Image 1 (cartoon, rainbow, N blue to C red):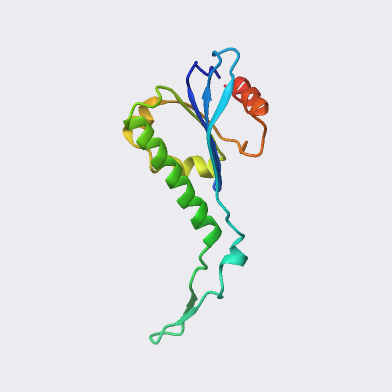
Image 2 (cartoon, rainbow, N blue to C red; image 1 turned 60 degrees about the horizontal axis):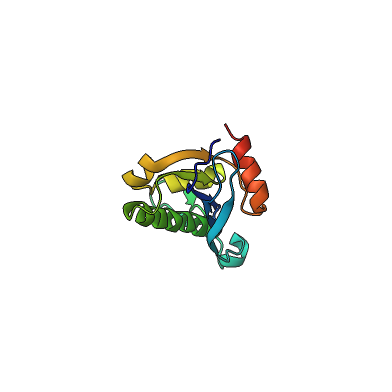
Length: 147
């Protein structure tokens, strides 16, 4: 994938985001970190305090269990929505012309729900991988290798 000069590259998952800017050219990217944010998100078992409840129907013999809330996933979704909100603000202030997003498929799906039209028009590419734990040179190689 071509990464134009000054392209804005976001590498994110449900708990960490990296905002990078390409100071190199399309053939030899040089990603520079503009912002890093990481949120502590313990496992669901550490966040929930109770088992799901049960409801008994007074009419009929059926019973049903309420679905258990996954607090860990809720926090990851909120973090992705917050990341999209930051992208929306930056797009609306013309902070970038070209945007590339690298995130796991589930996070990409959550981000897409919250994109403003300005973000969508500037989006040059998406890579469905989790690279938040990788080095900048590894992220540059992954971008160049992507279709």
